[in-house]
Image (cartoon, rainbow, N blue to C red; front, side, top):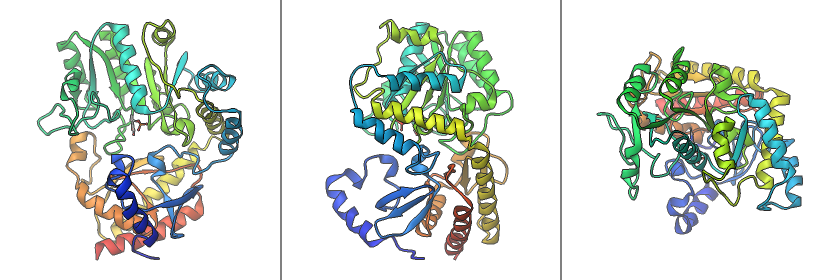
Length: 423
Ligand code: PLP
């Protein structure tokens, strides 16, 4: 297998850098090697030079059913022949909304959006309108989108700072940063400040490491939110329809007031959803709280949500995904031992994290920050060159489309990549 980045990709990249800043369309992609993909099918990506990759990045999570999944592909293609954007209501959005509320079982209502970033903003606005308060408690290492009031870096001394030039840092002043998996810390923040509107959390921390909530933690957040009268928001953009059909709320048995879904909810099509209780969500319905969007609930978006969530419900791939992921974690641990890399592997089968870090489980962002990210970034490049498409930041995703052959190929490619890295 070739260990060089493909020649046509290199040529495309030279051209792209003239017309696309950095040659990419999302800063998250700046660090990755520039490979131009021709297509994705199932668990594989194929580049323009004909090389295939076992995909464990899955578009940063959305492709829970693999690439170009049937029956979603056919359903959406056929639906959009009726047009795409009506700026009016249609049956597809209604059925998708009913179905999502049915599947999740706790929300009364949903509001469609286009990206996780903007649906998080809708949740904040709703929480502020509902409580008449301003500040948001959130957690070190969590990601809630790229806008000025959410994009943050977390310095060792605590708090958060803007993570981008041009970002208006003042907007972060309404953010109260707290260590995760520490209920006392949250209680202290809530007790000290009567202007907190909401607590927002990734219910499994997957933007830095792969860290499950400690036993009782999400229940504890629920209790604190009730005690202090603040809105509990689960940011389920990664966990929704991935860690269980009903996301983390179902998996851990804790019901938020509002939750944001994205990524897997539409199996790869660009859609987000804000879900919640009627007494909150109806603030949009009365017009008191504004949330708008030209492309909200386009025919494509609604059809994708309808078909993807029905497929996930009816095929129930979660045991398969978890088992495949657990086997893959073992493959990585074995190869790491064989080549004496000392990799730390942690998380759920369906979403886990590898790092050059400690032996012991990592339980918070500080633990993740102590791992050697630069070294892992170099290892990720070896994996990619050997035909395993992974994130530089160490997260691995598994889809329903990953099968025995994919595991087999991943195993030999991981072994070859680790051997080359160890040289
Ligand atoms: N919230 C979480 C937990 C995410 O992981 C992400 C993106 O990765 C977002 C929000 C932002 O979603 P989007 O990239 O669709 O704007």
